[in-house]
Image 1 (cartoon, rainbow, N blue to C red):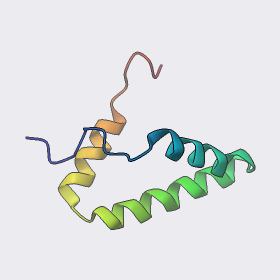
Image 2 (cartoon, rainbow, N blue to C red):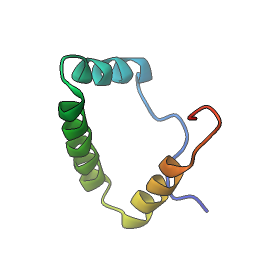
Image 3 (cartoon, rainbow, N blue to C red):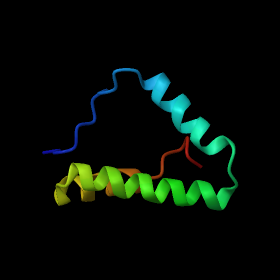
Length: 68
């Protein structure tokens, strides 16, 4: 049974995606990687549940035909 909420849970997904894209627009690849790493750690700390975090990592690591 999944502990990770995979249902849409954004109040405004488009606004979040736009803000995330803007965050990366001005920087180089190295800066974007550092931002992503810090964002992941901040959100992981907020979630705090090791099982949910591991499940999310496994799902994120799955390669789909659209990712290739």
